[in-house]
Length: 92
Image 1 (tube, rainbow, N blue to C red):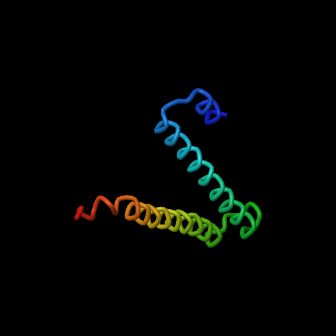
Image 2: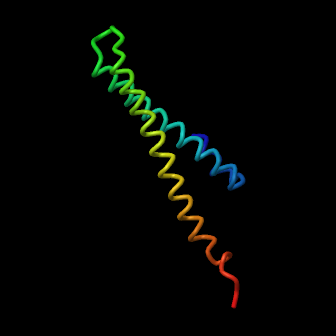
Image 3: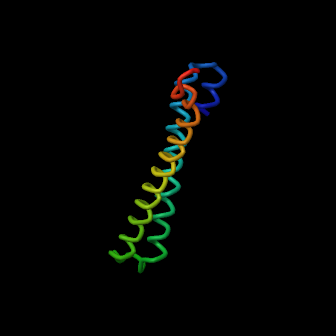
């Protein structure tokens, strides 16, 4: 609803992009944490703490975190190389 309100008010494009990115990041973290907790619950034995299940859940979360970071970094570098290539080549 906040993003819709910002669009209706025609706020600064940079502010809108920052808030949109923060919103998407929060949603992604919530989805991954929910999956990690649900997978822990499926591996665990009821209310008893199960260290291997906990470590698998933490490992899943860290794997998604690192994989997402690397994927974002790779696409950022590719986009930067494509976007700024005319600036790197001197005019004839």
